[in-house]
Image (cartoon, rainbow, N blue to C red; front, side, top):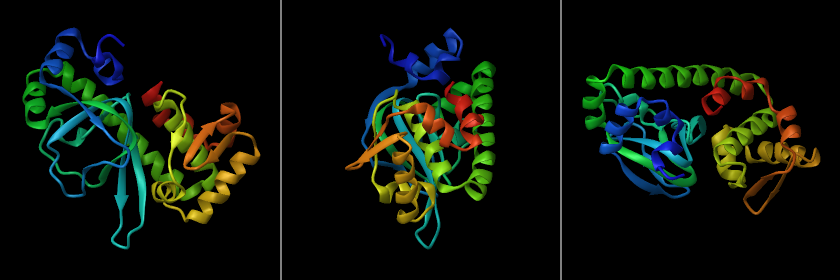
Amino acid sequence: MSDALTANLLIERLSAPDRAAVRDLTTRVRFELGETLTEPGDPILHLHFVLDGIISAVGEMVDGRSIETFMVGFEGVSGIAAAVVPASTFSRHVVQAAGSALRVDADRFRALAADRPDLRAVIAAYGSGLFGELEQSSACNALHRAEQRLAKWLLRCHDRVGGGDIRLTQEYLAALLGAQRTTVNEAAQGLQKSGAITYSRGRVTVMDRAALERAACECYHGVGRAHVA
């Protein structure tokens, strides 16, 4: 795209004056696979409007177990909790797919938003959708089978990487899904047997998206998909 800002759907929803004002505050940055942006309890110093790639928020327990709580791609912003008031993160924010983002200092963004009600409204609407996604995810993680959740997760990644391959290891995927590696392996094998995906050497290729959608739980068509659509 000719203008990097137009690659982020949330920024696209801003009025031209608000978009220009945000542009003046941002710096384009790259992030690499596995890079940690914040740890639990860290003050949120920056907002990242993702252009390409994926940032995952991962909740971690004291016994070492973890689970992804939400992901952010080109549809949104990481660090939204600090968009209106100072805040710290409750989870680890880690790069799930390498890419780039428009970084803005949280203090400067709050000062800008304080004088721009339309900007605050766009951010609030995104935050409301994200909160709905968190509510749905809590039910999904408790009620749906691993294969359904894996299919949903792969579809959501596929949406955000533009249909390309998804790089991950079973260990990493198990941590994101809050499941044992054997459970994730069985789920992946089931999706491979159906022809939905191939999985080799840490790389997932979606072969039959329709089959993958049939395998996914109803949550894929809920609020998380609406953020990208």
